[in-house]
Amino acid sequence: MINQSRIEEAVKLLLEGIGEDVSREGLAETPARIARMYTEIFSGMEENAGEHLSKVFAVDNNEMVLEKDIVFYSMCEHHMLPFYGKAHVAYIPDGKVVGLSKLARTVEVYAKRLQIQERMTAQIADAIMEYLSPRGAMVVVEAEHMCMTMRGVKKPGSLTVSIATRGVFAENPAMQEQFFRLLKA
Image (cartoon, rainbow, N blue to C red; front, side, top):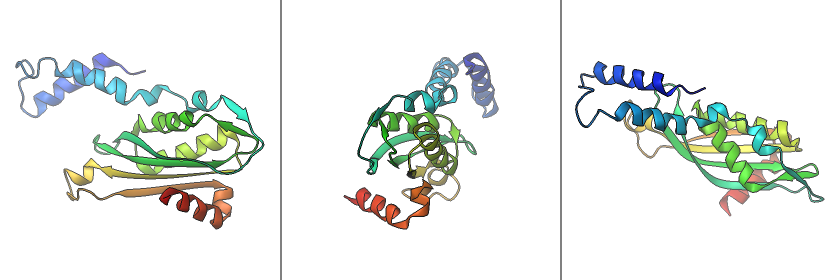
């Protein structure tokens, strides 16, 4: 459970730690604002992807379903700085599909946590496999990491790409090729 009062206390300590006066006009409400913001951007901590992926519909067609360009924002667990980009999620149904918005909601569940991109990519693929029981799933995430652009190596515009393949996508390179052709379409 997110504890807003603990977040406010921590923000006050942080501000004091960098030499700020927490009582000055511009900062007086900052701890409460950040606590509210963290409640929103870390809301995935209290969500389960299964809630979104549980409503399915029977289908006869078991061809690839691809939802691409799902924009997300997440927070790196190493520096607590944002990383953001797009997720592309595909699966091969085995008699049932889920509403398309539920794939985007699944991305959000895992993006709205302290994360590393590689884990988030795998968690999305694993959730699809667990809750939809498809023949396979593939997830590609491409993101820019603020810990690389505004500090450290300072390389704005560089993208990190992570891939997770499960089931027939892991076993069949032709399925992966079809996925990447559809991404370019």
